[in-house]
Image 1: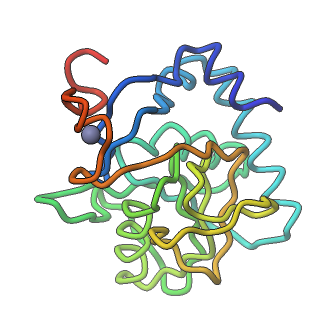
Image 2 (image 1 turned 45 degrees about the horizontal axis):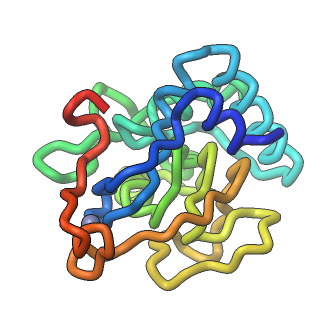
Image 3 (image 1 turned 180 degrees about the vertical axis):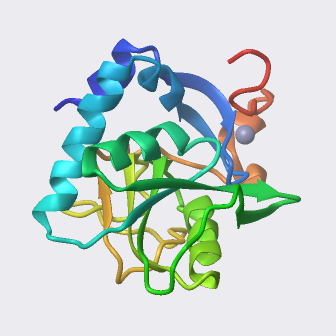
Length: 202
Ligand code: ZN
């Protein structure tokens, strides 16, 4: 499966000057919502991801997605795995499990994002799950931006990966894009302004 081609065909691989959720800047942004607007494509990707996860024999009770970005990918993966689907959401800056979702002591949860960059939001969701007694058994995403190491990839982990080394990350592809701290961004040096994807109609 050529995930890069799927993103390109959906006009979901944006080029410009973007501010990522981590606060870092990048020339590229993967607008997964554009890929997932076609439920058939969402199912295709989630089925492939589920197959990869099942092949490892990892035991999972529940899929938890950090809102908003992970919602559709998380639901699609839970459907493909035939597991419970819940989400975490940020309230006053803090990732929380709300909506009456319960997590049993020892419940095995996989955290699913659309894209894993540094894994910051996924880790915040993982902490919220563990605070309620759940066990985070791994992480999943449609694609990995190349900072964390996904299962089966040759790319090595970079220092700014926030995910724990001992837990698996499943993703369908690596997009090895550069990312810059705002004070060291060559695009800013050239005078353009970083745009937060989702704002200004993009
Ligand atoms: Zn910049």
